Image 1: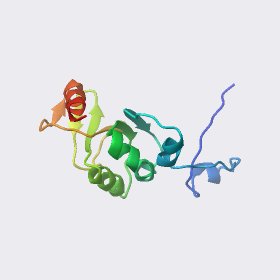
Image 2: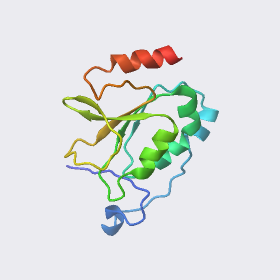
Image 3: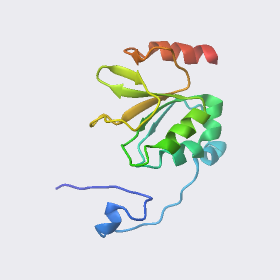
Length: 145
């Protein structure tokens, strides 16, 4: 038996058009959650179907404090994901496209990338265009602490 589970905040989603059941859930910004559940954040994974900038904004304080690495799916969009790029740049993060050839430093998200849709947002960077080993980024981050 196949079961599918999905959720969205988008009012005009395919789930809505399909007539999927709706349930109400409480949502809280990560900064608010962390304030009552203190933790050190080293790595974040984001996969939120076009709400990337909102999620990052909702954890801006934790990002500024802990400078975690962020792995984020960024799907190609007509708007080019400009708001997500502006948000991570405002936090002084560098995006790297995750590929089988390595981590490729990018300055934008509006390029053809096939099914390779994950990026590493790094609080540190090098001048290298392609990294085949993240150890240098880990060491740079460790040194900034």
